[in-house]
Image 1 (cartoon, rainbow, N blue to C red):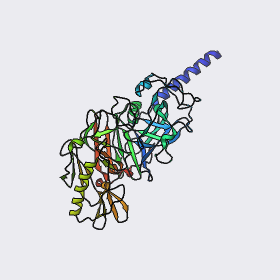
Image 2 (cartoon, rainbow, N blue to C red; image 1 turned 90 degrees about the horizontal axis):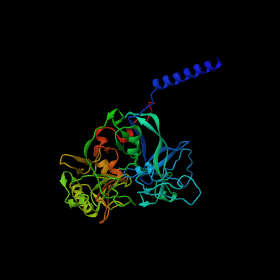
Image 3 (cartoon, rainbow, N blue to C red; image 1 turned 30 degrees about the horizontal axis):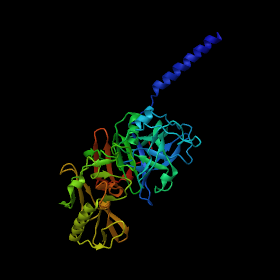
Image 4 (spheres, rainbow, N blue to C red; image 1 turned 180 degrees about the vertical axis):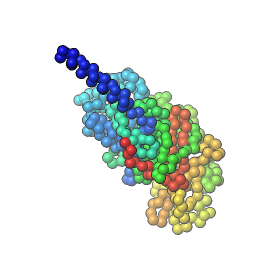
Length: 433
């Protein structure tokens, strides 16, 4: 009798639990969210990845073109859910690693035998090393495009263990870099695979706190303004631009097809061959970077661009003053007005795949205030042997929403949000969960 009663109670419990699970299906987000904050000292952009068990908020540098998430495992990495996949496992294959590693120090995160290795790359200093590929829990907020939503968890996000020395040159307090590049274990691809949404992400940088979205839009900023984008093809550089890479690896960075540069609608006379990617060497072209604080131009392009800009500025009675490093062209603010789009200076146009697809750069993104009465053109000389001819840097990206659709190979850009009476700092981080 007691046995029958026990079985009946057990069945009731099972039915109750089953009913509860059907009544409350697991939450699957359509998009995810990360805050992105500018470090005033280094001009790098940082985000926080909540990783490990128990969860630790790991501050990392936001690296738009980086291959993967890497963190320092040498110092204070403690987690009960850390795993190091065996060499030649599916995880290692996904990460592009076919080797087998040994470690001759005491076992710990980052030091295990018969595991596979990746390449943690400090793209700020151009320093790379070998590190253990690993997985661990990551917690991240979902979003509806207007506010943060519920927190969701990825139990086995793939990352690479780096070494403490790799942190040199990174913003104070950071423990690694969050790679958003075009790679199987880049964070956008991993987030999309974990929750079965589109391989798409968008970034809106700010001089304070901006935001990165992963998955489908909308992208809505206070006071309730949805942001749309103009699109152009993303290009693939067949040769890696990383600090260290295996032979045959393609670049994980994002290239676009700038075909001409104009200032106030006048074309700058440059060697347009430099704007194309050489299919053999990978040299040339235009990429977008969050680790370069300002746009970098190959020397001949820089010289032609600066000369053309100085002519247009002189035509507006804008007075040139002595240069202030790292900038070559600086001006007095005496005859320069201020508009909603920043200083009233010559407009820069980047012409893309078609003459009517133009990324317009206004004063807020072209001029850097270096003192109360001096502003400088925020473009720098990248040298005569620049690997990439044009590198669009962080300052030129601020208050522009840019979107990367990896499935359709399209890049979207809004041009400045200031013209839409909002900014990238105007995302509402008040949670609705």
